[in-house]
Amino acid sequence: SSNNNNNNNKCRNSRHWSSSNNNNNSNSSKGKFLVSGGVHPREYAPPQLVFEFAIHLLSNYNIDADITWIVDHTEIHIITHVNPDGRIIAEGVRAAYWRKNVNPGNERDGCSAGEIGVDINRNFDFVWGDTGGASDDPCDESYMGSDAASESETRVLEDYARSIFPAGQQKSDPEDMMDVALGEGISDIYMDVHSYGEYTYYPWGHVDKQSKDNEALEALGRKISSFNGHDLWAPGHDFVYPVSGDTSDYMYGVLGVASYGLEIGDDFYESCNNFESDVLPSNLPALMYAARVAKKPFSLGKGPDVLDLSAVMVDDYYRVTASASDSQLVNIDGYSNFNTGGQTITEVRLYLDVHPDDYDGSSTVWNMEAVDGSFDSSEEKLEVAIFTSSLGISSGRHALFAQARDGDGYLGPVSSVFIEVDQVETLPPTSLPTNKPTMKPTDEPTASPTTNPTETQSYTPSTFPSELVTNPPSPFPTFTITVEPTNSPSASKSKTVCNLFFSNNTIIASSFLLGIFRHYL
Image (cartoon, rainbow, N blue to C red; front, side, top):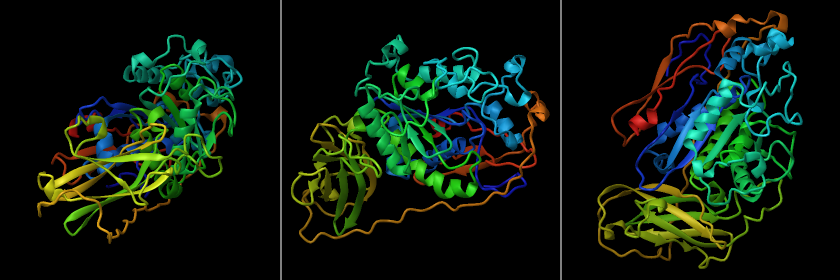
């Protein structure tokens, strides 16, 4: 990459509305995952995280087996900046710590220029107007607006989400149906990313009361937190304060999908160093896990996870190993064991070149064996030997997909690994030999942190630069990163990006090439 800004920050960012993938390499219906950031403009890290999530998917498609099947089997919709006008203020006048949008309508209510706007995360049309979780004072930071969904940013996100999530799951009278469970058969998941505080939250947010789907919501919420170490901001746990009219309650209570939020990092203006060394590497896997279970979040979230799946060539066969756990990700530090996390693993199936959702009975499948000889625990070590030469498959790369089931009948998320096949000899599939070869796990690369000095402006409401609202500066020149994964089509995958943090009132706008996933993957 190259940099057209004067500062040397290596964090990347783009100001754009949304992008989605619609890859068709699947025979089954797809789950949908909608992730958003930038509702509150002063929260610099969330848009960057969801943008890096897009880059991670794009850069590793057809390279990483899990990412490849996730993109093939999931519609992923990414909105980096829900509130782009507010972001201009947050970047241009850092000392303002701008939270709301820039709707000037409440100036007539006596608010100063620095107090205008509506808190988008108090404006959604579900339990709107509850002053226990929002403010009716137009000058307050948490002002709910003049009416439910009064703001264009709110309406656009509501309409977009409604257009992609199943109509059959949406509630006809949401506030009267709050005590009606969605059930484990629902599909799709929404996640809104905020900062800061290191929390994972889920409904209900407007009241310290568990929803009728709390067991499923908490099971998945715990698993998400197992990656980033977040505390649970939720009924029955650390319910920090009520929030009414927010995105999370709306998506669950109105549109009928699994709904979560992340409070990432430890500052509104997160440093590049901390973002790249801590926030990104701990929260990217959390987003990946949410995408992994998007098709049936309430069911798959209760099932056992296949961890550390590996396939190593030993002499003339592949040694495939893994662990399956019903408890590791859900029974997290600082919390008591959860009731979905103690069931016995009953089976783990390994599929060749077909995702379990696409399995029609005609493909090759193995039952992985418990290393200790029996499935009698919520934690199992697994193995199987695969003599690929006996399978009649072509030389080259193939995919293995593993999925576990527990004693309550719940299937867990799929894990996958690529193998390279060379035709050697014809032998039947068998159990591992007595003297089993060992494998050495690969080390996981870490991000290189960078620092980013910034300047701070003085600010008082009376001197608020209102011209930033009506006449934002012209964009700086942008630069392009081109990603060309190996074993992928020759077409390059380009996106226009720019820096996350700015100084000297520089406003850099740039764009993401919409439909990039749909066009190239």
